[in-house]
Image (tube, rainbow, N blue to C red):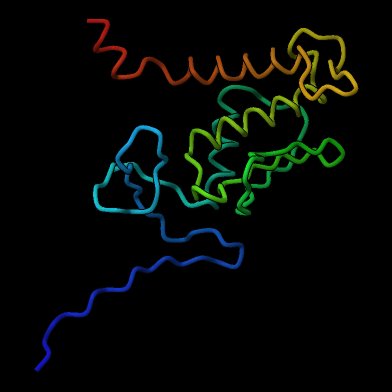
Length: 175
């Protein structure tokens, strides 16, 4: 008689938009240069939200650092890319963030939020330059990033870092 228990199948359910409905905890593989991947044995204990939750999460975080005067659409795109992390489409006021890397899989949450801030800096540069002490949009034909863009992005990142407060590691070092 074979009474050996069968291994339980790993359930990874995706809806029609390929959003993962069963969030998993990711492990950090050995080595400092590698990114977190699927569960491999040792858990980091860090919760990874489902892709469908990233849009509302990013909007919520952004509201904490800047109240946007002009509406925008946000597309958290599951398509895997090699180099492109996101894009801003001025004619549609569309901010797009690509969540998967073709070789490494799901990108880390903080990298995705950083990309979101980058694309939002483009949106703010076009829609509300006066909020950042500029008379008009600083775009120069042929240049992707103007000085105004870098000022806006720097301010957004500074506000986000200030909102985060001191990290636990930093407070321990200060003692």
